[in-house]
Image (cartoon, rainbow, N blue to C red):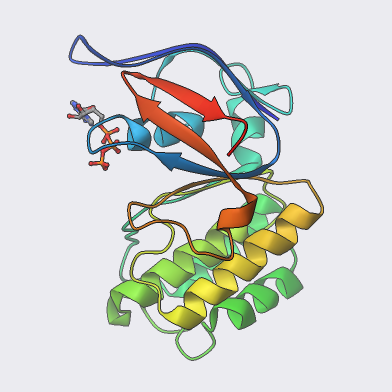
Length: 212
Ligand SMILES: Nc1ncnc2c1ncn2[C@@H]1O[C@H](COP(=O)(O)OP(=O)(O)OP(=O)(O)O)[C@@H](O)[C@H]1O
């Protein structure tokens, strides 16, 4: 469960988010809102990447007082990821494997799932945009994250990539141990839609439509 209390975020004295209280259980959430409404700011705050006022708890672990523990269980995949281009995909997967205490087999499964085998040992400078996106998704799923945040999850993915991602999200959701927050201006894939609940960002706050 993710719990947000008394969240405020200012940029240069301008209030962009003011969320008195929000609690969401594990499952799939689709975050929607107009351009500039604050979606990315909120996702980055929840991922522990931006300072904020208030308190955030993931399964009772506080982002403020136990940031390392909180981040151990939180994955963030950027809309347009970029990595040092002199590294290989495998360098990053191995690094995440040790931080996340994952197994070599976990890496192999994700390489297979996202079809990374042909290029995972090449330098990232040789990757296309979609290849980098697939690597970023594999990194987000590595280990046992309890919260997976995917900003513009589907952009630049080919149909096979989208299919693999949807399958993985649905599998993880079946065991009820993961909370997904996805943003997508292009709409959500029809395979995820029946399971997704809506989080709407508007007027500096977030509302959860329990009936969606
Ligand atoms: N680094 C920053 N400095 C100052 N203002 C910012 C900064 N980042 C975002 N903002 C402002 O905060 C507000 C929310 O921006 P944010 O990027 O979170 O919106 P968004 O809903 O993700 O937008 P989009 O759908 O266009 O990606 C906007 O008014 C934006 O101008």
